Image (cartoon, rainbow, N blue to C red; front, side, top):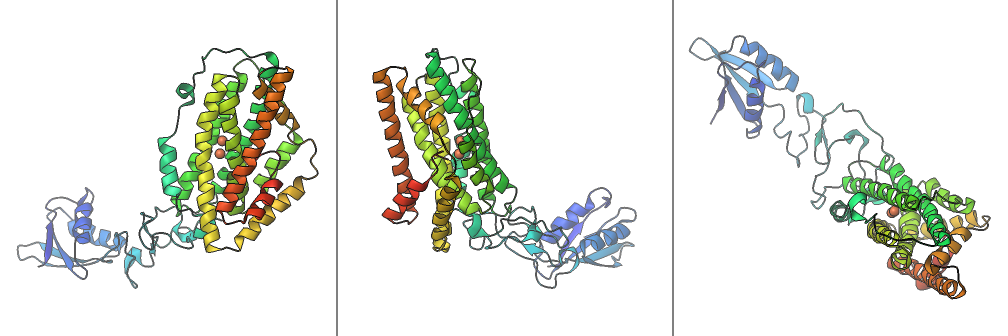
Length: 413
Ligand SMILES: [Fe+2]
Ligand SMILES: [Fe+2]
């Protein structure tokens, strides 16, 4: 049956094109649309609109003193997410590009390589020919993907907390000056580590092809998490009138190697799997042993966020190693060369190490320091065991895992 639409008195300067466009979109492939109208000059307007859309249009007398137009769609299925325009499609959709599918679970949804010509388009969109190419350095699926990306983003979005209300800033406590100083020193160290953990994913975020939007979302919310950690650590540091303490050359040298790493997977491995994984142990330690309730609360909340950052590093590295088992050797080399690069730094972490002992001791007495020292020794063992376990989960043998764990930076991150 011939599809017909009557646009009555509506002109193309008043929205008639919307009716014609939708009537065309409903047509079966190869069918035409008849258009009737009565607005003054509608025929000329329809011809002009069809030209901009690439549709063909012809007129015949309607037998009542007017005209009826026959419009042939330039493209039978331009707006279906699954469909690319057929080869040889006429008009503006000639050469349009298919961009996968919004749902990553559907077959073919994710390209092995994302095309620069897709630019910023929503995954699943049909991109008009002539759109400007946008070069994203990270455009290969195996370079960036992790199976749990969408799930981890959803968890992160649901777990965001408000620094103002999630922490009882007014909780009463007074620490001996020397212990409060130790807390401030540990937090000074933690803040610069958090800054590195913000800057590293933020740098990759701007280089990541938006086709892999689940990874983009994970990195974006990770950056927001780190901004919140910097905020709450700074607030706690200043809660009793202290200012930040010492930032060591060795600590910054360690963090700079993370910033300098150009490969996304290697950076994820060093920062998230090894560094943030180790940092989670430190946060658990602070949650358990910090001398005041505010530090204990912020350590608990930050540890929950950090666990997700580690989980993304793990899911990405698992996928990367699955597609390229040889990459394991590259990861091992990265740990070794980082260790070599940092071997010249002296006194690494001493300020933090001693501050942790005092913080866990809670007082400057022989029995308190003895107990604090033992707690920090246990922390070091927990950190090493955690790193080994994660390395083994990524397929490193027991000995290799122990060796690589032992080469990990003394800065923890
Ligand atoms: Fe953090
Ligand atoms: Fe983190």
